[in-house]
Length: 180
Image (cartoon, rainbow, N blue to C red; front, side):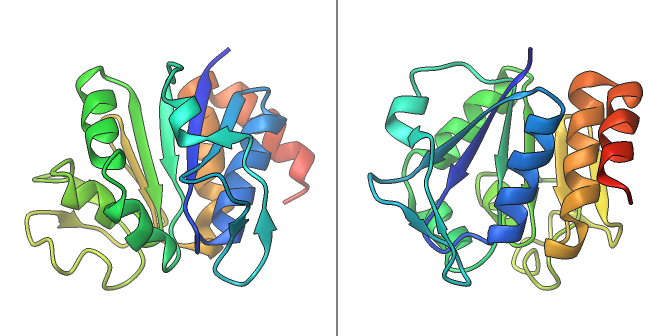
């Protein structure tokens, strides 16, 4: 069974975090939500999220994919955490999937992972990174890097992640259960 790490920073976008975790778990993917610290995570709209474990504990495991929810100040907190960029580069170097939504693709860009690649993000989030081939699609897949625009694209983003990890048939099964 594939395994996915979802780091949860204080101020993350709750729709993106919960949608990704929920849909991947519906697909029977092993998802670990990991807080950057030992506290419950207060998301960008005040919703309290309880991570499965700390990022420090999660770093003792191997994952097939990492997914960064966006939101502010969550995205800035991900960028400021000294463990995130090296983890992203390590996983990319191992050929693992790297995914980010909303403002979080800027974390990938800051880590140098989007240079010359196609990506999408919340409008303006990638403006400081002219080396990124910015797209407007809801979800953009460039090799093993997947990006998406924001809360309104979270279901499409999560279903794309299911498809990449488990195939079109499993994606269709999960999507049918959502009654879209």
